[in-house]
Figure 1 (tube, rainbow, N blue to C red):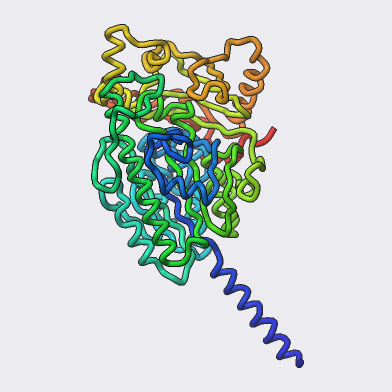
Figure 2 (cartoon, rainbow, N blue to C red):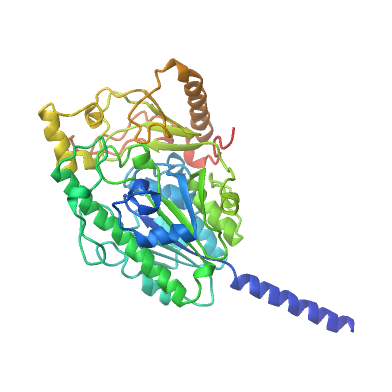
Length: 477
């Protein structure tokens, strides 16, 4: 064979290999729900929830038992995920704050690498993320999911794709249609920190309708993937931005607020399994980039958990961290989980820990307020009225899944408390976290009545210019 023919043979082989590599780059559907707790889905053991498509997704994919958000608050959580940075490092750590210019988002990196990218549904992050998407849609229907299948059908067929599909289910106020079952309130499971009466059960039953609507669209999207014969080339990722919109759940750092469902499936590329390993929501972007062969930005504080996807027992981090910042009401709490222990530190224990969903305008909260006035609440149900709150909280989540028994004062846990307190100090120092000197004031009173004047103050991290800090904080011991 002549040298020219050999060269042409090798070059054509290179082109074929490169073309094949491009064709087999995986696609991604990132299905992010609104206000859904992990424990409210059938794959996580909830017998009341009718979520058959998610059950199938979990059976065919990997279910993560210990996936944690960095904050249990809508817009800061989404901004944290898309940048793979902690909320106080994004410049948007409080509700309704928008991402500033200049931060890399993982969809933008995918777009630059040749992916077709689209966002449909709830946005809530600001215009700075829009350059990462070739299509931005407000979505359709009560849950904003109704144009998702058409987007999947009408995509360019010559590019891999990444779709950020963001439902508004299950955010209040409830909206009903025939895309999900209507639940019988009598059977609704009521957490021990709520009042178990007909009003609370009806409120929870209506919530589960919207939870099930997300399941309906999981099924529709997966059937379309199968119809296009790309189910095995598409990673389907299902998760939430924060916990259910009920008292002591949303915005709070207990598992019902901060632990997210996370289910990932891609038949043929990802073996089914269940992982108990800790992962953080800021790790999802680096993992997607890792799967697509795209380098992550040095700005990103998260790490890839691809080793866990290859082996569910692998460990990529020993610590996950989370924060509770202003969400209509002032707050400054920080959380670290390591092993079975969750430690929460409150900089402002003199404040009542409030969120919008705890105001008596909503049925489950109204039941608490009425019972409080009548002196009928037990200790666990009185949590949202507690002033002052503990400055330190420590829970063994294996023994106390609802985090009802604070064992921080137990002398037998002194070493655990000391070690977690030190880990939290290290994270605060390395990531530039701060307690605001001039914090944002409350937007409304504890009954939900808005104040005439509301002013945004300084935010966590401002005094140390945390938006310029890329240190990930402690990851492993």
